[in-house]
Every structure is written in C-alpha cells, then in structure tokens.
Image (tube, rainbow, N blue to C red; front, side, top):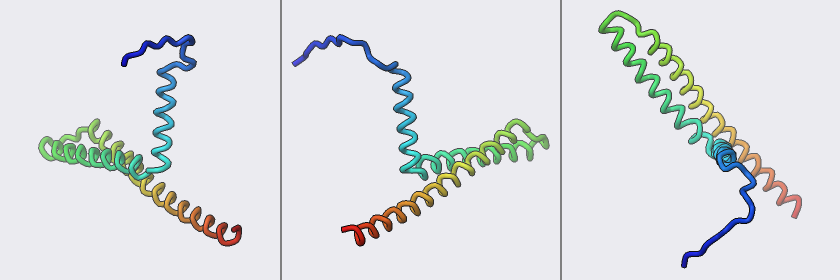
Length: 115
C-alpha cells in the first residue's frame, strides 16, 4: 500500500560529504580486517600490469633498438608500486594474525585468573 511522506526538516548533512565519509569508513574497516585482500590483490594486479608493460617495452626495444622511455618509466613505477602494496598486504596480514593470537592468549589467561 503506497504512503506519502513529508519531512518537516531538511537533511542535516550534505549527502555527498556523508557518502564520502561512509566510503572512507568502509575502506578503513576493510583495510584493518582484510589487509591481504585490500592491499595484496590490487598490488598483485598492478605488479602484473607493470611486468606486462615491461615485456612490451622489451619487445619494442628488440624490434626497433630504441627504448620507449615513457613506457619504461611507467613500468618501473607500476612494478615498484605493485610490489610495495603486495608486500604491505602480506606484512599487515601477518601482523594482524600475530596480534589476534596475542589477544586470544591474554583472554585465556584472564579467564584462568579472573573467574
């Protein structure tokens, strides 16, 4: 059954700014709870893109004996950025796992000594 609604007040927040705040919070939450997914997967994609572009640069150089300097610089940038993001994801995933084990150990000790 359809109903009609009339709001007496305007919205208190700017919808665009509020949407950006929610997106920022969502990315922060994913980055904390799934760092390997958040950093590792995009890092791997960028790294593979850099390596593919590097293959193209090598192919152009072998055919023309001229280095495509712009593509070569983009290749280096993508490779470094992708490797850094991938290793950041792996390291944060490992640190998160270690902290979870420490947290569980502290809680088990609390349960033994504080009934």
